[in-house]
Structures are given as structure tokens and as C-alpha cells.
Image (cartoon, rainbow, N blue to C red; front, side):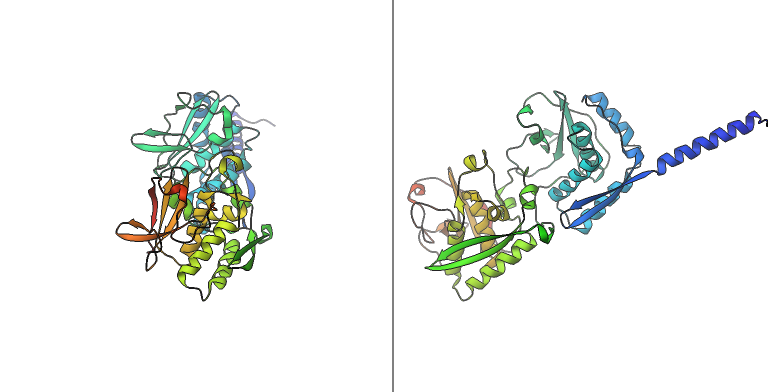
Length: 400
């Protein structure tokens, strides 16, 4: 049978169209367990872009040229819909981004590709994220204007960009003059990233364990059985040193809250407010073992209130945060945080000041020491070693 050139050309064009259409329509389905729910998404084959192990500007730009014309919108829509449905703060949303990138390209197989996926997904989610390369490493920054300590950052046009992945390199991370920012800006990637966590995700109930906490107050022994989840420590494993207001106000997860706060409220029922705050002060002071961060973690690390409950040891920063959270949640009183050169403590505003109160903004605050001291300090008393030390007020809480 003979075919003329017209039919052969028509057949080849049709075949190419079918092959291209099949490639564009092919998608792989993924399912990620994210705390107490699952994140389901599909990644189009065009979104699966290769990246060599050698990290340089040309390879990064080639990756971007390919992924920007891929069918990436379904996965972005899935991420943003999930974020909205579960009210994820930026830091928790970033944990979802990390898990998604890990599913697409495991970091242990190709760290550069994994990082580029995180960067691209965050940018397409609206965040202003930037890249820098050097020493065959790829560094990942996000625009943030909060007071963040202990992580590298750089400034561009008056904007601060904090590093999200320096911890992955550990001692291999180089500080000055090594990493050159890429001149790569994605349209609509303009939003700041916030480290504030005001809503914790729901965790799977079966992943909680009971922790027994014993505490004696006025010769009476109190027993607590608090549900705790190690996922909380994982969430904050690489969390930076945020300001006091931010980490003081990180809430407890639902299960932990429901097994601690109602029990405390029941124990405090019938007590005068001052005695109740004294109870909370001594609970925070004596129900947990003390150790400084250098010994406990090998560096300075601020724990959220739930992490303090979860960890075996904690220091004065951690106890101040826990005491603040408990007083705020149960009594919602005005408070200030006093930072000394080697210590941090709290003061609470009552109807009438107690002891050597602190005058701040025209109001008196009574000292409440939540960390063990050589002296058995009551409300209104300050440790002798601090009486001649200067301090600054680093946080002031006023109930709305």
C-alpha cells in the first residue's frame, strides 16, 4: 500500500501531538502524613526537573528556566488550599513545604534539587525567597523583618533576608564573602515570612505519651499526667532565636492544653489571685529539672512553653516563657520581662504591689521568680546576686 507524502506528514504531526499531550497530562500522585491529617497532591511530569550535583549559577538558572514553564499550578493550589484550611502559620507552612520537597526530591539524594524545590514552592506561594551560591553550596533566604538572632542574614534595598537552611551544612557553612546572591526575582513573590507561631497544628492523638509531673505546694503533693508529643520538638528543631514576645506566645497543642490547663484551674479554684500566681511560680520553678543550655544543647536555645514541659531540662529563658503562658492563660494579668546580663525573670501587676516592686510606665509590677535560686524567693523578692545588677525590660504584656 502506498502513502503519499501528505498523509505521512499528517500522521507524524498527529503522533507528535499525541505524545506531547500524553507527556503534559501525565501526573504522579503523592500522599504526605502531616501531623493529624494528610496532604495529597499531584505533580505533573514537567515539574520533575533534573539538577546535577555540581551547584553553580548556570545549573540553577537552567533549572529555573525549565520549572517556570512546567505545569506547577496544581501543586501550588493544593499547598495554599491546605494552608488556608488548617490555618497554618508561615513556619508550620514551611514544614509542609519541606516535606513536599522531600517527597519530590529527597535531600539525601540531591540536596541542591531539594533546596530549589523549597525555594520555588515558597516563591510561588507568594513569599520573597532568594538564593545564593558558593563553595558548591546553595543557600536559601527569605524576606523577614522580625528581630531574629543566631542565623545568617543579608540586606537588599533595606529588606532583611534570613537564612532558612544554614543548619543543613553545619560546620561546612561559610560566613563572610562566600555566597553570591543570584539575581533571580520571581514576579508576585513579594510577601514577608513570619516566624510567629500563634496556632499549633493538631497532632495524631495516638502519638502522644503521658508524662507524670509531681509538685508540692504548701505541704500538699499535686500529681499531673500531661499528654506530650515529640513532634513539637521536631517542629522547632531548627527554629531560630526569636524575640521574647514571639516565643512566649507560642501556644500549647490541643491535647497538651486539655491535660494541663483545666487541671491547674481546678487546683487554683478558690485561691486568691496572688496565691494562685505564687502556685504557678513555684510549679514552674520546682516541677522541672534545671540545666543551662550550653550543657543541655551545646548552645543557647529558647524553648516554647510546650517544649519546656516536654524536655527533661530547662533554663531561666524557658521557665520565664512557661510561667508567662500559664499566668496569661489562667489570669491574663499584665506582666513585664526583666533581662539581666546572666538571667531573665518575670514581674506581674496585681491590684497592690508586693515587696520591692518594679515601676514601669507608671505602674508597679511584683517580681515572680520562676527559676530555682539559692534562696526560697516569695513574690516580690529578688535574688541577692541580682540586686546590684542592671536590667532591661524586654517584653511588656498588657491584656487587650
